[in-house]
Length: 231
Image 1 (tube, rainbow, N blue to C red):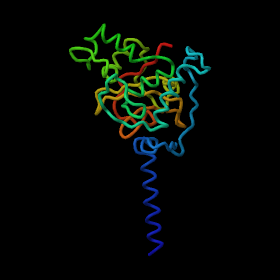
Image 2: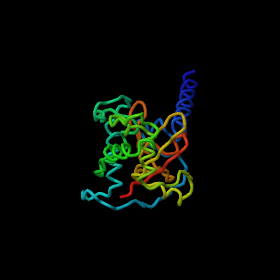
Image 3: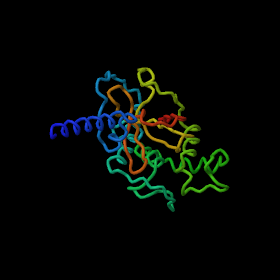
Image 4: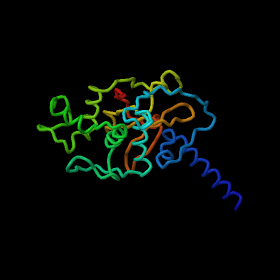
């Protein structure tokens, strides 16, 4: 009887581990910081093809500055909390997906709030999530508004991701910003410098309950925007 129970629990554990590995490409494990590659997949080396511009002269390319600043959200597990804040900026340990973007860009000395506030004030009608009068306390933290700004001022890149295509994989580089509009929830994140064994890039984002770094293939909403800052 004990042997049968042991075998049953062994099989159950194996099934559970398989579920964790394969469900949405390991999103549960990735979300809690355990990054495992699916067994038996082919290793793919994707060349770096990001800008080496170092505008803040810190010895690190600006796209990597963006990634490292965004990754702070993951390291501290910034709590997902959607709230209106006087002054616009939430506390350092709180935020939503859009806060990952401006915090990441700050790493390269790019002040997204100031840039967006100015553009929204001058082109209010172009921004779908702005009321009758612009509100600098919240407008820069709306996904559709960030999408409009990036579409206007950043490089627009492919929104088609092909998992086993090296040329396509090269188009997804650290510091890129990805937008998901029109799915279950508008969402946005930053492409990491980390890749899975098969070359799939990870994305730094914030969703309930806290910020995390997960594979791009874990997202089921359609990719509607893919942008790269004009360094």
